[in-house]
Length: 87
Image 1 (cartoon, rainbow, N blue to C red):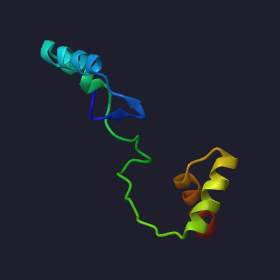
Image 2: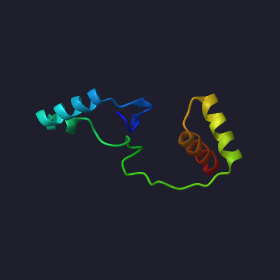
Image 3: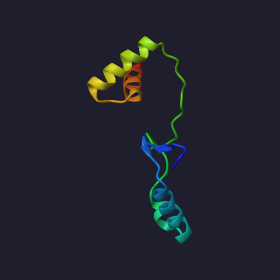
Image 4: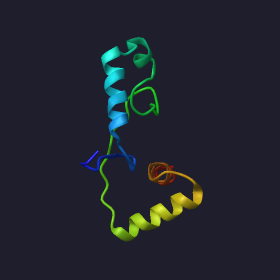
């Protein structure tokens, strides 16, 4: 493919495009598509709210370093810090 398109860093080939087109033309199993679920898993009985947070480059670097050390996500660390502060 001449445009250099990639998916997760892997180049998309003409063969892959042809395979996707053939799959689409043959039809999809709608029941199988519906079973896959949607979006991120819930955190409780009600939908969670997204809250924007501005951090400096240094704060973000420190957060990422700790997240890597603890094998957690940024969000997990922030939620834990808020829970500890609010307790």
